[in-house]
Length: 171
Image 1: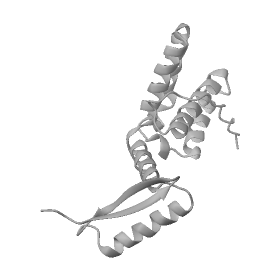
Image 2: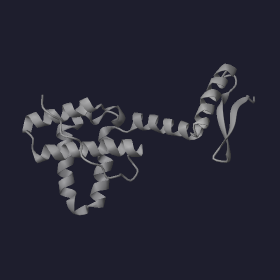
Image 3: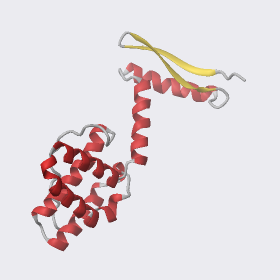
Image 4: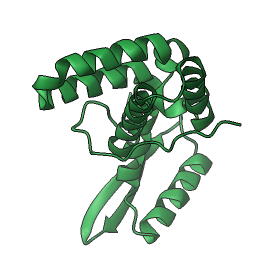
């Protein structure tokens, strides 16, 4: 049985495009009109609604699927490939993360980790061993993991260089 499909034809950058708004009866006429109005306002502002939808879907998938530990493992593997001579240092760093960071935020999706949570984990580490170069390395690597996922939206892509996270202040 065929269903009616609500669609919106639009032109953006001189190119004709088509956005599917849903199928009838799953999407009512009123809902289709609302979706059309949202898409039309995006087109008026120069935003491709199809691209916007894809980005939102990707962000949702990334938020659900990539945990901090998974993203850290991907970054670790990429760094080992980039600088094979430093594999021992990176292995030591991963052991420290497994001991000091992963038990607290390792299973959490990266994009759901708040700055307060990360700072709390780092302060806990700093209180145990003091402000050492080890603590700074862990802090910088955690910042790299989070920024890589935020910047690229996917921990499996080539990562961009990032600056270190600012040192948390003790209160």
